[in-house]
Length: 173
Image (tube, rainbow, N blue to C red; front, side, top):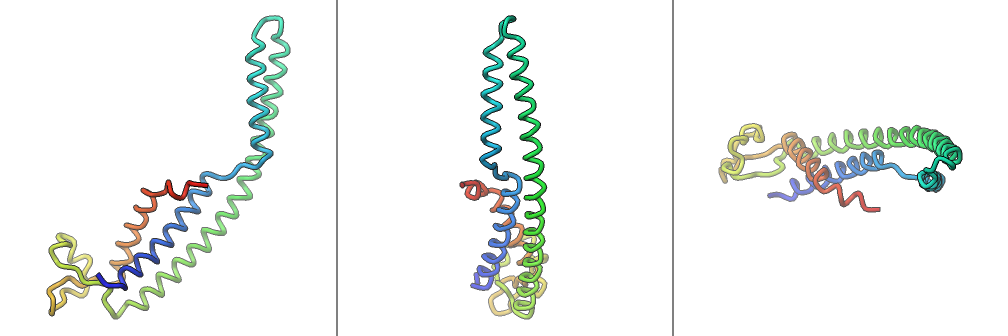
């Protein structure tokens, strides 16, 4: 395998890794100290309300439950505001990443358009050898010649799959 193929794979993998990281960060989000404090207060209020389950303390338990419900509404408002702000930020980053991907893919296509990216023995690519080799077979070695467009498609699919399978590495704080 040539160094060009490895280089293209590394570049495409890096772009997929950044894309996956942004996707995971958007899904996971982060909690502010205020949100954590509110969650703890809600837990404590509900715990106290559950402890007051006798008929004589029903009014106090109901009051604590109403207070916990009010705090939950407050927490929902805070989370909604944070989500809106962060969503627009992630959308900006995603657009920048998309433009970067298009530019880098275009540069790779222009750079490797007239040359082969790699040559692979024909028996390794069966039955997909025809799809990957637009230029045919290298007459000197008999290997299948792979161009840049099929290689970009193949490496983007493989790197996306690898990023999905190994996303636990990105989840560490």
